[in-house]
Image 1: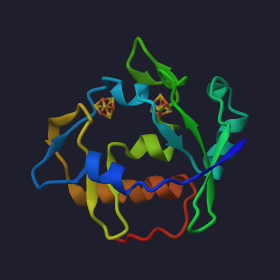
Image 2 (image 1 turned 120 degrees about the vertical axis):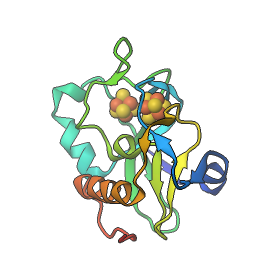
Image 3 (image 1 turned 135 degrees about the vertical axis):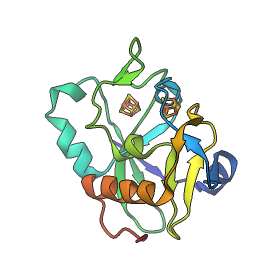
Length: 157
Ligand code: SF4
Ligand code: SF4
């Protein structure tokens, strides 16, 4: 695996993410857009270990490690080239759902350390579905963090 240093993500957050507004609606319309972007998909080491011997993940090559220069913490990730190898194009679905990664399970939401819930403004499902219950979404994100083996969550809504 190759080591990469974490770049400042502040500008990306400012450009693509916005605090969730009260009354906002969202649902995943399964358009598959987010699985076809040239993004880095982060995973925890626990997720990496979980998927290593699982044949459903055999098409996935995870060959990079990100190093946080401030903390020295590391995690593996892969970069989508064209489409994620776990994406089923015809169905517009993730082939490993619901055993996907924390990054995928919580997208397009982001829980900031101060508890602010952000949404990625580029998701195609914004404006569809039910009104988002922010507290329920925060709890869901924390559950997903726990499932992914993250420790020391900074937010306790
Ligand atoms: S872009 Fe949004 S609506 Fe489309 S598949 Fe991704 S999460 Fe679902
Ligand atoms: S693991 Fe699944 S949800 Fe995540 S990027 Fe790949 S196909 Fe999409």
